[in-house]
Image (cartoon, rainbow, N blue to C red; front, side, top):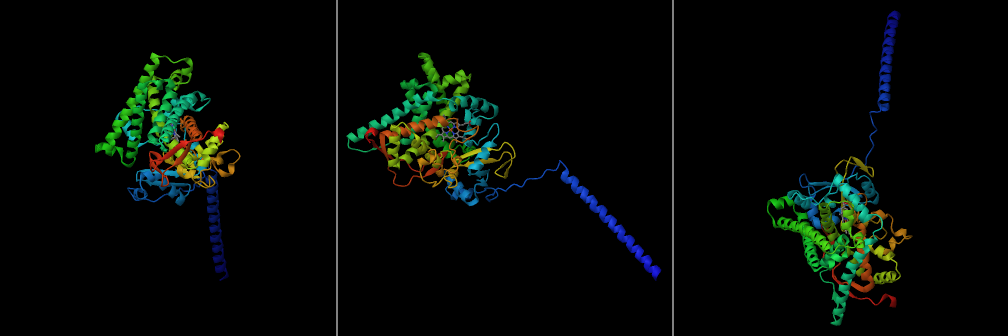
Length: 513
Ligand code: HEM
């Protein structure tokens, strides 16, 4: 028994020993495997990205019906604003079933986006325009350019329109603005002589004409405007630029390719109007060149004209034409509607008008500057600014893949209490240095965008707005006559939802105040 037991005990020990050895081998193998795999340079630690909340939509149409229920394209800025309140500062949505985009609204995310826009930032272009350009094999200006061609021309225009001393253009802006405001003053005096109040007629058209006139005189000098032929050409030109804006905003709600295929009127009108604008723009340049040939400009006049600066920078004349026409188109609606919004904001606050008038009499402009910042913050004419991401990237800890369209929701960011104290109030003082408690994040408002592809006309537009609003505050007392609150809707740019009715009376001389 003992022998048997010993025998059995020996076998048991041998089996246990074998198992232990095997177990140790397996464990040491796994340990080695774990060590080599973690120390291997080929395996990278995958960072943990915060997922971007996605708005759920239907398979083919995405969230199209939600957008239609919210009022459609004219209310897109408000629809997106409501989404931000629901999902936060970043979300993803397939709007209308076709366009998948990431929307961002916080100052930090916006900054992060511009830092990663790449060497040749790509922005979304209106479908109707790109379709037209392709159909007509049309070479366009800066806004439509891409890659190296864009960068080359952009660098030249940065030097001429954004950087350094731009006082040379003040004389042109001052002269066009003085003429407009003087015309209003004469009309007020005539109305007063008849015992009537003066209400600004056709404000939108007048501001369009003014913004185009300013750009022509910056391009060729103010002298060209004295020619009656030029005045007629400008009248016609500003009317068709205005019409193009109306036609292209109608095509925001309908696919242009389909409209063309069905031979619809909205496409035919747009197509013939764009053709006219491009042709008329080119003939204005021809007219200016022939006027200058007949009476050559002095050296000083040449120094005060963008056309000569572009020639001096060796820009070929065909390219100058392309650039000029697109500058006019880009300037027309943006400046006209930003000015309307600023006039609206000012006309709602008579004490502010008097304070700005006094400030101007003392040759200061802090409040005026603050008023313009406020108007652009609350009513950004471009409520969405987009970039296609040039590579896979991360924005604020969120992974965004190459070619994704990221849209900045400027309407939302400008009204975000995290960026601005009492965001819905017009408080020009908040922009006065040293009063930073009213502004938590100044980058919450970027009406001209930032980065490489920001607005090339920013300084021109700001000079125009300062000149117009300053003169109006000094010379007039303004009152908004609209009975219903004025709100903004999107028609390519944000515009008032009703015709703006402004009544003007003459301001007593500021010195006497
Ligand atoms: C208050 C008036 C204006 C506002 C709010 C405004 C706004 C903007 C914004 C936000 C962009 C950037 C678009 C993007 O990044 O995709 C832009 C681009 C542009 N703006 Fe303006 N703009 C104004 C006036 C003007 C004026 C007066 C001109 C002409 C002198 C002009 C010419 C352009 C051009 C050519 C571009 C395209 C730049 C490029 O692609 O490199 N803008 N504008």
